[in-house]
Length: 60
Image (cartoon, rainbow, N blue to C red; front, side, top):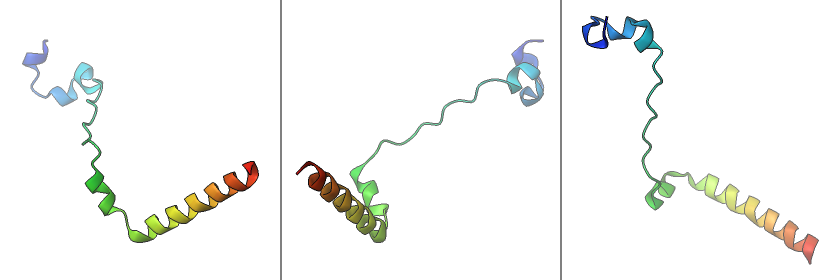
């Protein structure tokens, strides 16, 4: 039986095991950064400063 003749393609053994199509993702936009909460920005900034100071202290 061909695929065109299936009454329920979801129940067909060859159609049910077909690879799922990859989900298309939207491209990254700088406007997406506005959705990040302020406390995460502050926490990330503090972590970056600590790491930068430790790197400079070790190599200085």
